[in-house]
Structure formats: structure tokens, C-alpha cells
Image (cartoon, rainbow, N blue to C red; front, side, top):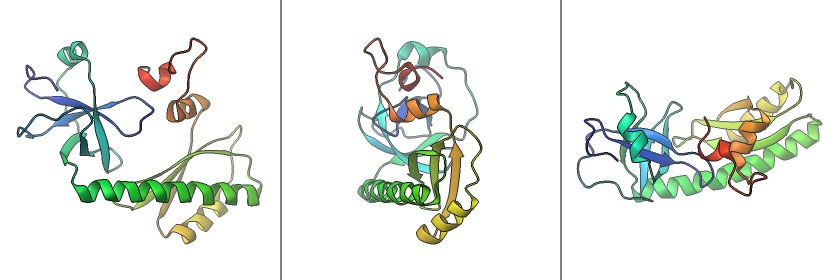
Length: 181
């Protein structure tokens, strides 16, 4: 968080692997946020719980003022953290069920990750595939199983590497998980 800027920003990570995202601090002028503290943020997809991560002051100083709806709503309460832990378990269960249904249907796709929004309104499945896949029947079956809105998003292999993490041939964490956009 920068104190010299009129509009302070904070870096937040949603998973241990991956790049941190920048969010605007709206009038959270109580105590400064500490590294590793859990916060509730407003993202493009809705509310989410993340962890305050380190930021680079040199990049913070060059930041252009911008209008964004990505901002920190509040510090995470105990209920938010418990809710997120329950959702992580539901994501694991959803991943396992979807993987089983993909095998049953013989679809030529590789499931990468399942993600549930904080409010529980949507369940998003990320997958990779060589060609287009007709997954309409799978979506209907998953919707009846989980009683929520289902989204299937096809991603590329680099996006998959960014989500899952790993190490490059140089022995360092993958560039796409740390600093590449």
C-alpha cells in the first residue's frame, strides 16, 4: 500500500500459486493492512476472499489513476473465512464429480479447476481441449447435481499453467504465474 499516492492500492492473491491482483483501498483508513491479512474484495465476477500480498513500490509510484470497480470491501470476518473454507471443499467435490461425469460421457477435455463464487451463485469449471467440445448435456447434469448456475470456460495450456503453477526449465517459478500478463 502506498502512502504517497492519493488513491492507495493493495495487492491481493486468491490462491497460493499465481500472480497477485491490485485492488483499490476505499476509505479503509483504519489500520494499514498487514501482509498475509485476509480481505473481502469486489472483483469483476463478484465478491471474493483473498490474502494481502507484497507489492512493488516502484510500480505503485508509476500507477496511473484509473476508475475501477475492483476494490477492497472490508477485512475478512471469521464468517467470511469459514465460508471460503467450506467453498474450497465444495470446489474439490465439484471437481471430482465433474471429472467423473466427463469420463462417463467420454468427452475429449481436461478439467483444470473448479471455482465457486463467494455468494455461491455460480460454479465455474475451467478446462483445456484440443477442439471444440459439446458439453451442453454435461452442464445440465452438473446444474441438477449442484443446484447452481454452471459455467464452462475453455482456457489455453498457458492459462492452465498459470492456474496450476509449476517450475520452468530454469528452476524458477513459471513466469506466467509470477509476473507475465
